[in-house]
Amino acid sequence: MPWVKSARIHSPWLLHLETGGCNGCAIEFIAALTPLYDLERFGMLNTGNPKHADILVVTGCVNARSKRVLRNLYEQMAEPKVVVAVGVCACTGGIFHDGYNLAPGADKVVPVDIYVPNCAARPEAIIDALLTAVDLLAEPTGGDKHVNQR
Amino acid sequence: MSYLRGLGIVLATLFLAPLIGGLLTGVERKVIARLQGRVGPPITQPFYDLVKLWSKQPQAVNRIQVVYVYAHLFFMVVSLLAFLLGQDLLLILFIFSFASVALILGGLSVDSPYSRIGSQREIIQLVTYEPILVLLVIAYYQVTGSFLVSKAWGLTQPLLYTLPLVLASFLPVFIIKVRKSPFDLATQLHEPHQELVKGIITEYSGPYLAMIELASWYELVFLLALVTLFWATDWVGGLVLAAIFFFTVIVIDNITPRVTYSWMVKFVWKVGLGLAVVNVTWLYLWK
Picture 1 (cartoon, one colour):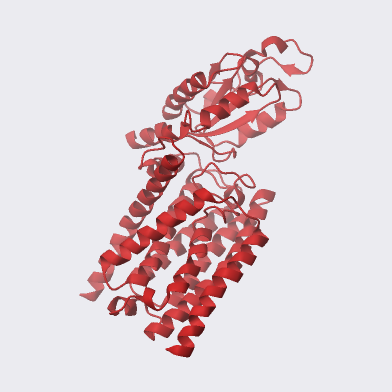
Picture 2 (cartoon, one colour):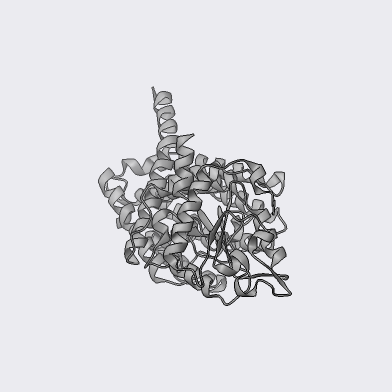
């Protein structure tokens, strides 16, 4: 239905998880929420509650302790949902990719839809990724998409 | 003829009240954004939020939670309808309280600590503002000699002249009910503020959250309608009074931080209840 699609495009609510890293990308993500970049003009709100959120923003390297937190948050979100990995640590593990306690990338734990590689990712890049994520929300490809195939 | 008129009011309320409530919420978000020096969401943003939430996957923790959401919405709509049909103010406030109680029971029916603590705070809020609402009804009775809302529409002198302190004491009640700072203890709707994750509505998602949002629009219209009661002699005066009241609440929301529940109880009972009691006593002794 066109008005459902339009509503999904205009109202994505965010959930942010810092999985444990240098916090650089987390700070850049929060900078995107400040009045300078003003994500709310796209209708985006930082909810802090997985049950209300549409987009999960993951920053930092996913370590052995935060794996289950990430998985748990992802499973509590209602469909349709999109995962955005922000920063090179969340994308591939970055310089920590062969660390003994790390998953090399958030996509080893949850299915990631959009990658923002950078160290640290700029707010402009994050906003670009979130606006791309919105299109995925509007055109969900069905429940099977969110099975980890990697 | 009067039945047809009643039916017309009911239908108009059912469709227009969420429209007005949603637009007011959108205007409020825009005003907040401008006060903070940013562009802000479009005024139609609340409708996007509502449709999006409605189109999401329904996810409920247990079945009784869903029943309480329906009860919350139903009693909120009924209290607004009863008000606009000119019914008994005392009964309307009982129905209105039951709408809050339904939300509290829904919050208490799940095991989440955030939801439970949020519900307990909501109970404290209910205890805090309920005496003021009862005093408002008593003061209304003292002036008009009736509990019927329709009595106010026939007055020649606005109620504000005889009940100024009661309107002042209604301000904290309004802020508590629309969940604005400094009294946004139990939860915050359509705001990025976080306290206890989302407090009483933490465990609601998708269509059920949309229903709570919709109920909050009916609630906003109901509370503003209560304000117009203080200037019920003409339409324009009532609307202007409600607009001033609403804008005051937005400004207070933006310049105050969240307080603790004990501070809220102390402040609202000392100042709010005090003002209402003074007004009622004054009416009793000198009128």
